[in-house]
Image (cartoon, rainbow, N blue to C red; front, side):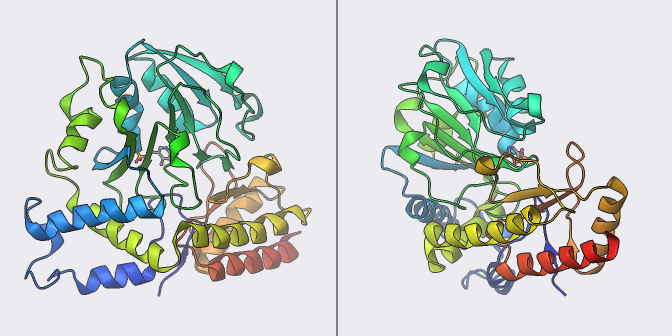
Length: 358
Ligand SMILES: *Cc1c(COP(=O)(O)O)cnc(C)c1O
C-alpha cells in the first residue's frame, strides 16, 4: 500500500512516473538493458540527457543565454562551487534565512570574504528580510539567497533587486513548484530529491557570461564551465537520477507545466494554513506573507502531544511528518508529487486528533 509521505527529502515522486520507470527497469525502450547498466556515451543515454535539458528549459522558460547542467554532490557541493566559480573581486553577500543558507554562508567564508547582509535568526528564521538594492555591496561578486527554507518553512515572496550583481539562489525545495523569472538570477541550483527526482543529481542553471569568473584554484569537477562545455558528460553522470528526473519533467509538462502545478500547490497549502490559522490547538510561527507552499511546519500546544501526533499519523498512513530537530513539532512537506487528496486526508486527521486530545 502506498502511504502519504510528507518527507522533506528524499520525498514522494509521482506514481505514474514510478510506474513508467518500473515498466522500463530491465529493458529501456527496447535496448535490452536498464538505464542503470547503460554507457553514458551511448545514443539512448545521450537522448535522455538532451531531453532532460530541453524539458527543464521549457518548463522554466530558461532563456537562451543560460546553460543547464546536471551534476553530482547535492546542493551542498554548490555551497562551495558558488564562491569558487564566481571569484573575481573576492567578496560576496549572503542573506541568512535558515539552516541551509547559513551552511552556504559558512562554506563560502573559506574561499571568499563572505558578508552576512541580513539574517532572520533573531526570530528563529520565521521571516524573510525585506531587502533593497542599497543593502547590497555593488562590488560583490554575487549575492546568495536560499529561496525556500525547507526546515523553517519560509519562502521569498519577492526577488531581491541586486542591481548588476548576479543573484545566486538555492532553489532545492521550490524549483518547479512555481514560475520564476530566470532572467532575474545569475545562477539557480537545486538538489533533485525534494521536488524533482531521486537524490544524486543536482540542477545548475547558470548564465553564460558568468562561466569565466572562476578562481584559479577552482577544481575541474566543481567548475560549471567544465560541465557546460561537455553538456553534463565530462565524467560519468548520475545517469539513473537524471533519467527519472527527465520522466518527472515529461510528466509535469503533461500536467500543464509549472503554472498548473503552482495553482494546485497554492490550493494545497491554503487548505493546511487555513486549518492551522483557524485552530487554537495548532500553530505555525512563520510570518504569513513569507510562508512556504512546500514545507509547512506546525506544532500542538505540547511537545508530548507532538510526539503522539507523529506516531498516530504514521499509523493512519501519513508518514515522515516529524519536524526537523531544529524546529520540533511537525512539518508537512507537500511538494508537487503530494496529491490534493493527501493534504485533505492530513487536515481531516488533524481535526480528529485535536478533538481527541484538546
Ligand atoms: C536539502 C537542501 C539542501 C541540501 O541538499 P543536498 O542535496 O543534501 O546537499 C540545500 N539547500 C536546501 C534549500 C535544501 O532543501
